[in-house]
Every structure is written in C-alpha cells, then in structure tokens.
Image 1 (cartoon, helix red, strand yellow):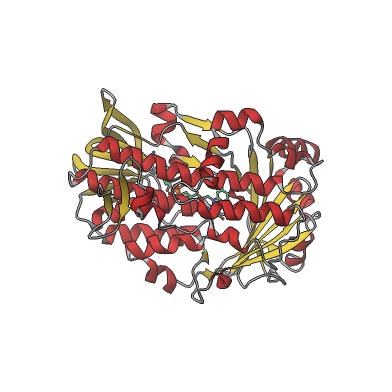
Image 2 (image 1 turned 120 degrees about the vertical axis):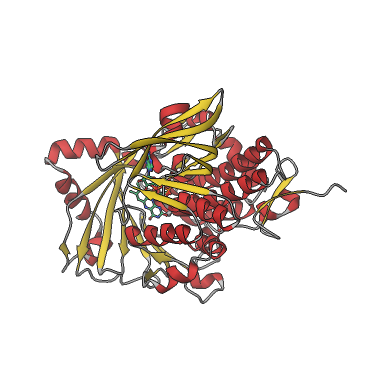
Amino acid sequence: MRESTQVLVIGGGPAGATAAGLLAKQGFQVTLLERDRFPRYHIGESILPSCRPIFELLGVWDKIEAHGFQPKGGAFFHWGPEKWEVAFRDQGDDNTNAWQVVRSEFDQILLDHARELGVDVHEGVSVREIEFDGDRAVAARWFETKNTGAGGRIEFGHVIDASGRAGVLATRHLQSRRFHQVFRNVAAWSYWRGATPLAEGPEGAIAVCSLPQGWFWAIPLHDGTLSVGLVTSRDLFNDNRQRLGDIQAVYDEALQQCPTVLGMLENAEQVSGMKVEQDYSYVSESFAGPGYLLSGDAACFLDPLLSTGVHLATYSGMLAAASLSSVLRGEVEEKEANTFYETVYRHSYERLLVLVSVFYDSYRGKDYHFYNAQRLSQDERDQLDVQAAFDRIITGIADLNDAENAYGVVQQHLRGATSGDPNPLNNLNRVHEMKKSPMDPANAVNGLYLTMRPQLGLAVRPTE
Ligand SMILES: Cc1cc2nc3c(=O)[nH]c(=O)nc-3n(C[C@H](O)[C@H](O)[C@H](O)COP(=O)(O)OP(=O)(O)OC[C@H]3O[C@@H](n4cnc5c(N)ncnc54)[C@H](O)[C@@H]3O)c2cc1C
C-alpha cells in the first residue's frame, strides 16, 4: 500500500464505494480500506428508487440492472387495521427503479465498480485509528485483519469515514455519536425458502406489517429466499427472551400475531439461523471537520421502517464527493464545503427521522408499549432539535417541500380523515427521491449549491 494518498475512504459499503468512485471518476487519487473481504454478508436489502440517479452518475446502474436482482414494484403496508400499497409505477415511470438485493452481491458490484473507476481498494484491512495534527485529521493506522500481523500508516489530505455502524471517527476519536431516546429497537431476522408470494401489493414489494409489539418486514430476494425480520423494542425483546428462552421462540411467537407474513410462510422452510442487531437510531453531533467527512451510517442511522439506509448512504457519499471535489480543485474553502455537506445531509436525515416518527405515531393501537416507546418526547425534540427539523420541513427550506406533503397525507390518511386519494401514501415514496433542490441556486447554503456540470462539485450562487 502507498504511504500517502490524496483521499482516504474508510469502508467499502454503499457510502464508501459511492464517494470513492465519484472522486476517482474526476481524476482524484483515492485509496479505500475495507475491513472485510467481499463478498460479505450485510442486512439492508430493500432499495429505494431514489438511489437510481446516483448510480447513473457513477455509471453503475446498467450493471445493477443486469445482475438479476428481484425488481421491487413498491411497498405493501398492513399497518394496524389498514392495508395500502405504494406502487412505484404510479409515480409515472414504467421502468424498474428499485430492487430487493442480496447485499453481499450488491455491495460487491459497487466496490468492484469503484475499483474500475480507479480507486485503490484494499480488502481485509482495518483502520485502527486516525492521527490528528491539532484538530486536523492527517493519517490513519491500519492492520490486516487476517492475523498476519501486518500493519502500517497512510497519510492523507482528506479522509471520508464510511465505516458504517462501527463509526471509527465518531466512536473512537470524536465521541460525537448520540443515540435517540426513541427507536431503541432490536431487529431479529431469518431467511425462508418456498414462501408464497405476497397476495396483495405490487410485484416484488416489501411487506411491512405491524403487530402490537412491533412490526415485520418480508422481502423477496432473487436467490429464492424471503428475508423476514421482526423489529421490536429493546425492553420487549429482553422480556420476551427471558420468558420464552431464546430468540427463535420470540420470533416464532411474534409471527403468530402477524397473519400477512404467516400466510406467506405456510409452506416455507426456515433456512438460516436467527440474526440479531440492535438497530438503535443515532446521529453524530457533527458530520465534518478539518480534513474529514462522515458518510452513511458512520454519521447517522435511522430505524429501518422506511428502508432509507442505502438511500442516505449513497446520497451522502455523493454529497461528500461533490464537496471534496470542489475543495481539491481549489474552488471552495474546506470550511464552507463542510458546512454545505453537513447542512444538506442533516436536512435529509432529519426529514426522514420526522417521517418515521409520524409513521409510528399514526399507529392506532396506542395503548401498546411498543408504539408508545416510539413517540418523541419533548426532551427528545429539544435535544435533537426535531422541532426545528420539522419547522425547516414545513417552511420548505432546501429539498424538503415534498416532505410537508407526505407528512400531511400520512397524518390525514392514518388518522382516518377522508383524503379523496385512493392511494394517498403514494406521496410517501416521493420523499425519498433525490430532489434537485440542493442543485437549485435558490436553496444555496451560504451561497453554495450542488452542481453536476461541467463536473460534480459545488458552485457559487451568482450575486445579483
Ligand atoms: C435490521 C436492519 C434492517 C435494514 N434494512 C434496510 C433496508 O431494507 N433498506 C435500506 O436501504 N437500508 C436498510 N438498513 C440500513 C442499511 O443496512 C445501512 O444504512 C447501509 O448499509 C449503510 O451503508 P454504509 O456504506 O454507510 O455502511 P455499511 O454498509 O455498513 O458499510 C461499512 C463498511 O465499513 C467497513 N468497516 C467498518 N469498520 C472498518 C474499519 N475500521 N476499517 C475499514 N473498514 C471498516 C465494514 O466492513 C463495512 O463493509 C437496515 C439496517 C438494519 C440494522
């Protein structure tokens, strides 16, 4: 491995591969260190249509389309007493825009593509620590994970931490990760073969079905398995585990309360053991500093209810590449680019955070502990400034006009008002789309806006 690089990217998941690939595409020297050897297992299988523009920008869309993943026609919700579907075709585009993916294969395509674009990728190499000169990140210490004992040091001009939930910078150096008081949930999932396809909803849809103690996802994959996961609160999970003896028993008991998913599994065989993750939601106090940017799950993580993780990872990877490109070309000061990155990414995260909370809040069985636990307290609102986030949404700053719409329809529909629209939650899908507005000079952050032409970067809004 070389001893210095212009840009170091930590982690080869969707955030890291996107950021690294887009930077290399513009001719910058990029080294990426990935702890595991790909293909490696990962959860997060339901992909939103909003990822498509970013994959097109990377030039990887055709490869994803050709791979044979399960096309995802939309989502089907069985939420409390209500059933409805979100069909992507109703968004006015007949093309397949989204997929249910086996993440080991999907992430491999993205990382291989980054390599083809010129990124110097090293797998099986873990970053142990970052060195600072004052408050500026300047170098990384790494070691080979296969017990060879080999290790070394690499200097960089800039580092993008895309190490996912491990969060090298936020957890080991900055101590900046803050867990939300709500969404302290646990996910337990497994894979099934021979499942019956969902009888309702668009083809290949993710099914999201509530039960008193949480909710299930059911995601059909192109390898013939169905991914079926339970999300429940940490307290309920621990109590039930103690009462029933093991995780499998907790999962089995919850399935009995979820007729939609149970029906799909009637003739199916469970073909994997249980996997568990504490999917607590968190956010870092800051996403950027001298010499560094935090991208994807390394910066923030949101409850998987609306399948937003890969969207946020690729979106932030693209924003990081745009911001850094302009800094490296000498067009924008690093401090200004960091402010742009932080502001735009945080807005995207916050609007989805608010939507997830509205969604949970809309559940009608409020006497159930799980749904009470998902409600934002006043403290939580103050601490996380969610009220400010919501205010930003409804005042339409940045790319958030559509979220106001979605918030309205979610509340209207799920609280039982007559909306007149047979599929009012179709609008929900739109909040995930990559809006053009960070590219609109009218929404500039400190005079800067995102541009793709003549190259990816930040542009200065012309003064009148
Ligand atoms: C239960 C659950 C269900 C989910 N369902 C969905 C879903 O349906 N749809 C969706 O879009 N999202 C979903 N997500 C979220 C999704 O998994 C993540 O948001 C997404 O993978 C984030 O991508 P990333 O690139 O930021 O991180 P990751 O994909 O985690 O990649 C980070 C990479 O960094 C590497 N790494 C870590 N530490 C180091 C180190 N020290 N040095 C070098 N490399 C390192 C890791 O090996 C890893 O490959 C779900 C999450 C959970 C927990």
